[in-house]
Length: 109
Image (cartoon, rainbow, N blue to C red; front, side, top):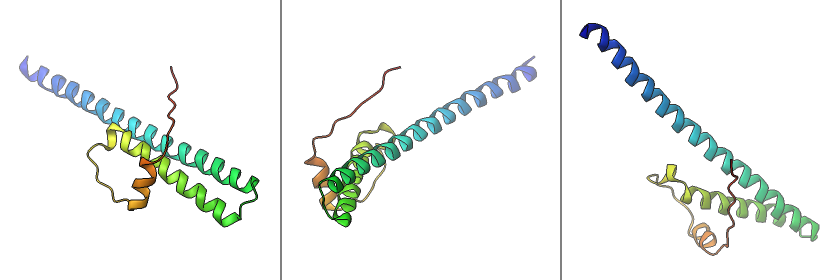
């Protein structure tokens, strides 16, 4: 009887382990989607606003890139998935993020 239960219990543990791994992959996929969506939305808004105000093209694009990087850095620092990861940032990036009044949205279910 014990010989029959061994594989069953081992298989159950393996199934639970696979569920945990799948959950982590899903969480990372959501985080990456959040990064991409936030970056592109911020870039488009800042760059488009600057272009509409007749700011030179390169300055508009650069402003959008900087703003997008600040938003992604903010999300990176808030995520529990990235809690133990180390990254290197230019001092200007960290200062800009700390100086920014960031709004966050979370959709309900």
